Length: 464
Ligand SMILES: *Cc1c(COP(=O)(O)O)cnc(C)c1O
Image 1: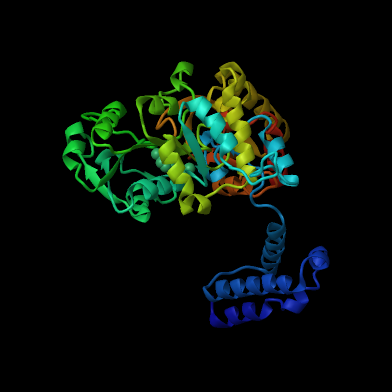
Image 2: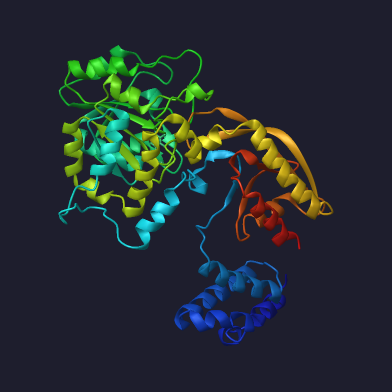
């Protein structure tokens, strides 16, 4: 593009005043603050000036559309409901766990007005951890519990309270990184504890821990290898041996369980995941895990363990800094109450368990129904077929296992696959599918009942 052409394009960018006259903007002009409207338009103009200077070429319709979209996006919720057709049951990008039956209603009620978050029947300020702690101690056998913002916060808090300025011994095989910059060495540093690595990547022996213990040791830490596996010539020290070693040297043993299985998954043909109850029974002094992985609740970090440690943790100022609000407390309470019930009741009502245990025939029937709906409306524009595939559990839970599933493979007869996939993510109820080489794969393990309507609607919005 020549310089004069650029200058012409720059000159053709409409002024703020003329944009303010666009009829499509009038509904925003009536409701939004004038100064913010001007700011939004100015930012857009600036963006387009820079794009022209950088050599981009576009027409005025494109610019207009972009400005109108900016207004639309600003006033519509981004964190709105979306369809997870990725087949990853616990997807951090899609908000991890779909809540269980009754949770959304309870959260709505607790948030629309006031809640009894931290008050007792005498009207006095009370312990906000009391109720959840009561349920957790019954379910897990621990002496006490406290919850914080997430499991990363839980780890930080525990290390800070129990081991600040002291060494914490961890096996080299457990120095994990979980997505989003949660890395054990960095959390350790933030907490003020000193990382003392022992063993090798594949093999760590009890004597390695024992040899590292000195007068400045603060704790022994075990971290669950959530999102990876070391296979082959490996050795890890089982928790009971770490507990015995901790007792011998009066050192607390901390168990970061990550996904926090409250039931035995192997009973249902799912991969074995260490349970919270086992950890407590084996004698871990403190265990921590996420509320929004296998528990299927809201984002939070759950800390359970010996009363004397929980009491200390509750008094730590970080607990106040990381505390959860009424919505999180209510969502977690209702989710945990499900675990008080008989397992058949739990399985019927638990959002995550239902997806993990979804029978393959049910997935096939659901995907088949949606495929027929799509074929009826869009067979001129799309190639649609039902295929067998595999889903992942995700969220660093049940490690790297895969589950059988059915997908609808959608291929546009014209136009690009990537563009169609992108368009599906921008409609009113966005649909996230796997973009494979040949087609977009909509994995029905994680598509909830009724959501096939949103998928059909999404294609309608895009193709018509
Ligand atoms: C997922 C995970 C974390 C981080 O938990 P968040 O709730 O995402 O903060 C920490 N440790 C382990 C072992 C995990 O699996």
